[in-house]
Length: 376
Ligand code: SF4
Image (cartoon, rainbow, N blue to C red):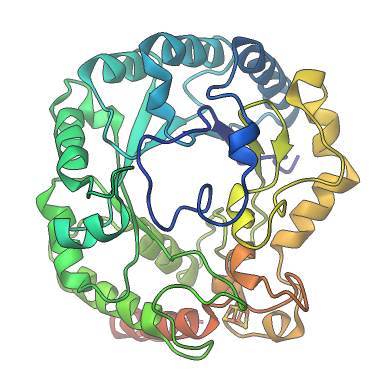
């Protein structure tokens, strides 16, 4: 049976201790977070565990769980312990649990709890201090770099760091130097790094992108790829590795990449099921299903077979003719849904990063051709 879901993202805390300027949760016009309780309640956590267990039994394949926010470590030790123990009571370590954190609140005590319940920790950091501190600031406006690096050092020093340290996540600043960013991450001793493009769409171009046809992000990624391939002891870059794997004929199940269906479901802090919350960057409420369903109602597996969820799955596949006949489709997949948004035509568009993706894919193919001869 095909997997119903690949990833479940739990919004365990609705507030954040920092205030990144580009955050889609707090700075894109959607104020749903302010109507949520600060933390997922015990009742919602128990209902979530119970429903996920039913889905696990039904689909017979593991899925990943990501604790997200806001900032998940705002939960503190007691709530985190309750949450992880409740999930682990029903889901074996075959079901990866990870925590996506801004790193500021990491303590040895919280890491001990993560270690006990086999939950790994990925830290968001955008590069060296002068780059990171432009974007990832605190509520008083000052940069968070020093606190994040301090938190990351605590993670690296934990006796169980080989399991706990799930690497870094960075948002691309197209005006930064990719080589400087790459070697900075390498100097931090991270096991891997992943990169995301900044949010944006056809009506609101991403930061630094002059037009639909300009390739600031593509240029940046191409330079990163060159630095990466020239490094004899490379720091794994997940997005590039995944793309190279697909080009070499492999299958990668990842949102916004390739044509393999990817099932992602979000459980909001109050238990409401939503689409990927990055869709909030398109318009207020874009992440809501047509019928409001709460996980506490006890019918998650039925919902995953509903027309509402099927329509959400369909929405992830590109629909515009330009993508459907595109020679890059197998790898690009039409990009992330949020990047396709345009007021006039909804999500029925190419990605706002279309030109960037084509440039990067061409460069990848050329690099692989040097090693293996031509690839498809
Ligand atoms: S977004 Fe662009 S590169 Fe990607 S599949 Fe569509 S047309 Fe091709």
